[in-house]
Amino acid sequence: VTDGRVRHGLFFAHLALEKILKAHVCKRIGSAVPKTHDLLRLVSLAGISLSAEQKAFLARFGRYQIEGRYPEMLEPEPSMTIAAAEMRSAEELLTWLTRQL
Image (cartoon, rainbow, N blue to C red; front, side, top):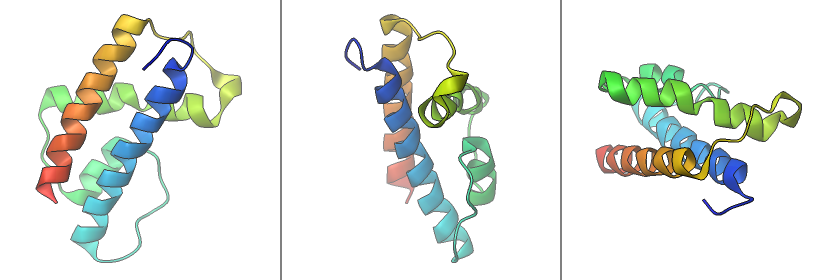
């Protein structure tokens, strides 16, 4: 995340998590994945067990897909410190989910 691109970076991190979760769902059900951006719903459909901390992160992180798709609903931009922490958490979870495939 670089200054001026915080929202973009977080939106694309959300997309990466969404896509890896959809891969898990596809692997589990063997057919097309429902059209949703809800990360927790995808976790449920994939049958993945997450910690309470990971679930809380995904619930919070869902806001970045809304900001990316519906700019009229923008909330205040997170600070660089918060954005960097969110990106680290997203990267850790993405790495873990990739290894699970």
